[in-house]
Every structure is written in C-alpha cells, then in structure tokens.
Image 1: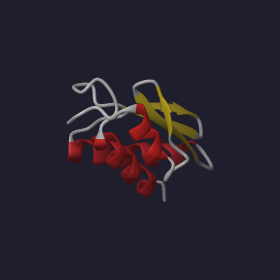
Image 2: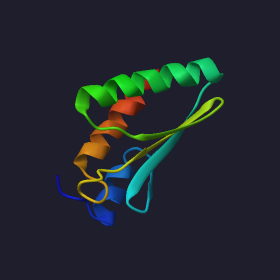
Image 3: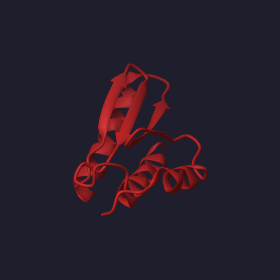
Image 4: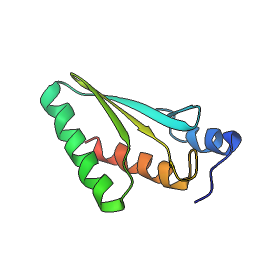
Length: 93
C-alpha cells in the first residue's frame, strides 16, 4: 500500500470529521457511558483488527478509547487505515 499525501488524507477525513490527521497517523477518541462499554468496544475493535490483520494503537482512559492508525510498512496513512477507521465507526454501536 502506498502512503497517502496530507491533502489526500485531509480530503478523505472531511467526510468523517471525528477523525483527525496527526503527523503520519489518523486518530479519533470515542466516548462511552462507562468503562465496561469502552472495553466492549475495544474487544470489537480487537476482533476486527485480527480479521483484517491491521492493528491500531489503542489508549483506554476509563470511558474514553482513542484509536490511532498508521500503516507502519508504508511509513504513514494508507487506504487501509481509512477503511479501518470506517469500520471502527461502525463498531461504535
């Protein structure tokens, strides 16, 4: 997969304003009612990550989960990251 340029990333993120570009990554923080709901989301994300063999960095802070995506082999954000971001949004429930 080829690394996307900053303008390409920004153009794609305009469609999903909850994600933001941070250097060579994209990131979003999801908020839940409590820790249990946050961890259930993390488990859904983990299952999806294993299925597609693409693993985000995950930060859990009580009821907040931050996902950070980058394709390390490409040295930045690729189409694979944007597709994963859409899947994570759908897993939000």
